[in-house]
Length: 598
Image 1 (tube, rainbow, N blue to C red):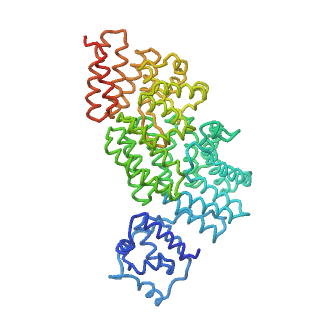
Image 2: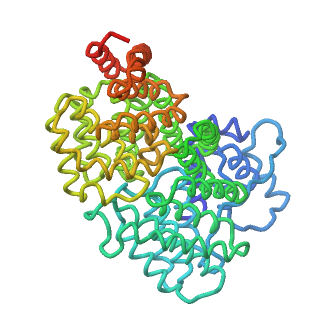
Image 3: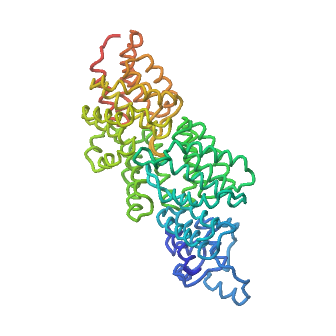
């Protein structure tokens, strides 16, 4: 690919991602459409002035300017010729020159390698993960014999999204090969690459969520010590390390610890990541930091702070002009809409634009198919759960997606809850008991991460079965390990996905299980703690009031029982207002079956 063709490809991708026609770009940069057409066709290399204008308008962070080949200062005659494409007045004030895009390592070969890395970075920034991976792999092959350059290319490969719940064994093999070649080297470029690769390896190994998807001899839990070791070495070597290495290690180690470390510990890492990313001015790491920070703020119950972070991400997504960044923002917005009970707004995105974007990107093989489709499915599932319309989902093609992904624990739990909510209670009990048998009675879950939403959904399924008095005695032996897991997170909100939906306070699910176990007073204590975290979520408060009414009805205290009907009536009113048909039905059933006395 010639320099002209490389510039043309990058400009064309950026323009289309920004949703601009050639004529619209022409007016924005004040160059003629015909001149821009020749640039986009690769028949004309622009001068620095046009490259700088396009960089600014398309928020390319200096990438387009960096693609210009080194050239001598033009003569006066050449300068006049270069401006012939300029339309209207001779010029307009220029903004500051953007920072140059990230370059290859100092010791990396130039030419083809640099070009492949730059093209891969452009594709990755715009969300075309598969093409970015192809270009990074080509760079890896082009750098044969140069250990630093090959390691640099593998780091780029490792940044690509991969299918959730699966381990990329080919990538792990390349990381191991590069770590072997860099072992023992203490020069700074080698140290930085070794830290980056080790952090990526730790994160990638945690992608396996079960025996079938884990790498034998390197199960997810074995990466925790490796991640903590990389973080210690990072601290020991600061401030000598570059900001991008600092960001990369924080990002990957945080994800490696996600299923095993307390949410508060991860929040400290994501806050640090945000600060370093802003200083580094890296668009990639700023995006990573904002998503990580929103996730961790939500998990510790700081919903207001998370909402502010989501707004900041909205500005970032608009700045990037990336379809993938737009999809991530829409997913975050839908998560907040569901939490706030704004189901119509959430549905517009979840069953509309989100699915369209996901289907388009999967069809064009831009990203791993399951990454987007599982998020879309998860939000559609929770929307119908909140609306009490699970039967619609159960009878749609989407339900096949739930069954097909039962290698992922939360979907096994989700299937059990869906069976409960569609009246298939015996099948739901079979599902829960089979799941328990496969996981040592729910004792093989990690202490955090994906285990928490899985336990929460199972708690709801068990509670539904208990309300219907379906096979409760068979379920009781498996309640304690679920309670122990949830009880360890009393001040947290349960987040499913990365991120997909907020299921509610962990304390609520602890309360449901306490009620299944026949401990109404304990259940009431948990539910009171849950209210403090959910008081700004109308949908959650509706469910919590019904939960509390059920717990109060089973209390030995007459005074406690007396308040149950009032709570159920309040829950009924809100459920009808929000369109939560299932909760409204349960409230009416509760009121019909409750004594009308004091």
